Image 1: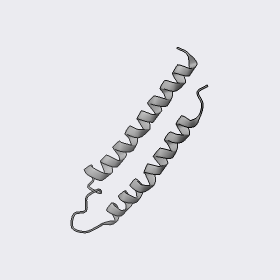
Image 2: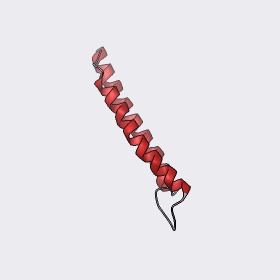
Image 3: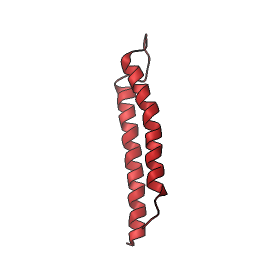
Image 4: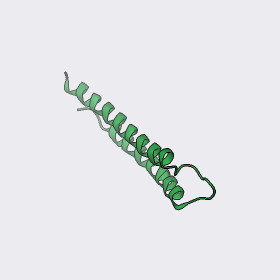
Length: 73
């Protein structure tokens, strides 16, 4: 295959992998470990989970923008 096509497919696979990894981490800690839900009162785990969520979304978007802004070589 041509090098530009390979570079494009690498970008797509990297984007999908990082997005799925981000979703797996957040769903594991949020849903399976019950940090996304407030039961009777807000705990430190709930606060840390939501801080992580708010911080990680811009980092994920920054990574995507940085990845897709570079021209294909």
